[in-house]
Length: 161
Ligand code: HEM
Image (cartoon, rainbow, N blue to C red; front, top):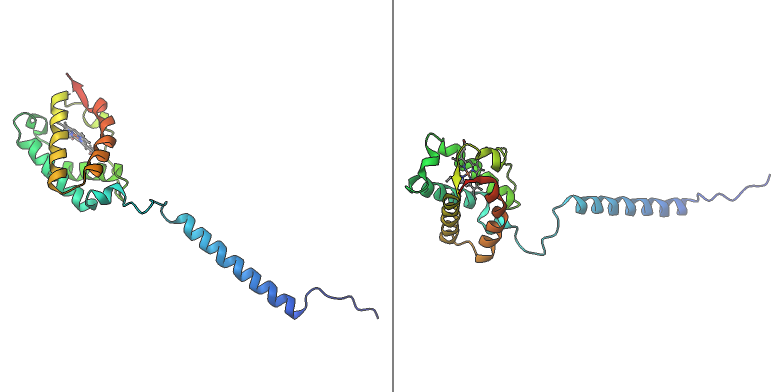
């Protein structure tokens, strides 16, 4: 009887096993790398530069306290539940700063639709925020980046001259 040479010698099987194991490990590593966060070139994300979610809460808290006590801006906050509003604004800021926060409130246009907010009220909020970011020790770069990201809200929020 003629015996055909088999390609599956024990030695070849061993090689095949190692090759498969190597492939499995590389695929797993590639999948893990693909799922991890995108590279930030070693730069901390904006929300981290703002002090993280808790640092942002402090800045928003102080900014809104100023808005509710300043005679030039307080009228809009009559009857508003401030602890809830503070949490919501902090989540919004944290989210647009790439933070791990989930803002579930209204769009800016919708949230401010009934308030007839003037350009000068809006500008006072931005300067209060700017001062509170300085007070919290946030860098110029991070502060300006946050204000740049907030700038498009102006056209949705300001409804009165
Ligand atoms: C950078 C500017 C501003 C941002 C990012 C901002 C952000 C927000 C957010 C996230 C909410 C919550 C919406 C929700 O939970 O559904 C909100 C609500 C509110 N904002 Fe602003 N806001 C800004 C400017 C202003 C200004 C200038 C005023 C008034 C002077 C103001 C007055 C209010 C009031 C009264 C509410 C509550 C509305 C309600 O519940 O009926 N906001 N804002």
